[in-house]
View 1 (cartoon, rainbow, N blue to C red):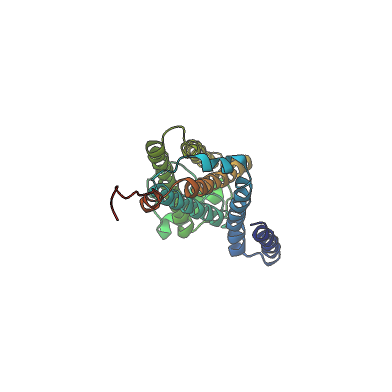
View 2 (tube, rainbow, N blue to C red; view 1 turned 90 degrees about the horizontal axis):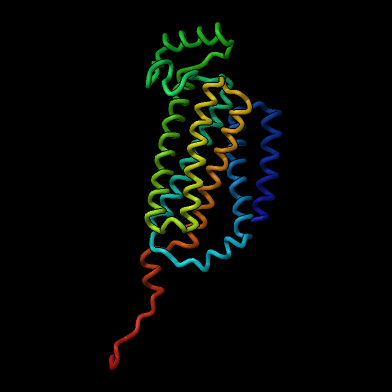
Length: 246
């Protein structure tokens, strides 16, 4: 893992340098997403060195393998969401949608050519933002939809975990922290729009997003260590033949 981390951070440095010299937005998107994955790798390295990780061997194995799939799916959706966020940041168009929870006063904004021209006229006159496109508006709407999906997934993960392994299990505590993070992340995303993308709020939004991803990844690792499928649990139970049987 350390060798992989070394290679990854060298590659990340090269990507950052090429991003500056080539001025390619596509490289910036990949650079930002790769940084999130590197953060997960470093946190995983730290996790497996802790007493907490070694102490998981003493926890009774639970037959709730479905939780592992739920954690993996939710974590991958969060990674996709962070990639969407990186894509939005490298569009250089300020806020494609200036209001929340509505979008240009509607639940789904008009993205016709005439409407986009009207939006751009208002942006240039009021705040001197760069012009936007219909694609950028749809991209931000997709970001909002995925955010809502993540909130529901994490809430379901918490409910399912607490019900399956109990309130005192380490995974339940992880899931409770996950819920706290996603609620904070949701309101930071809204505040980013309400404050016209204030630098401190936007930075906090990115940071909490990274913590949300890492929490999901660490929960997945813990789940694979303490949760097993029915077949695994049954195969580990010793079977004794009745007396007199051959």
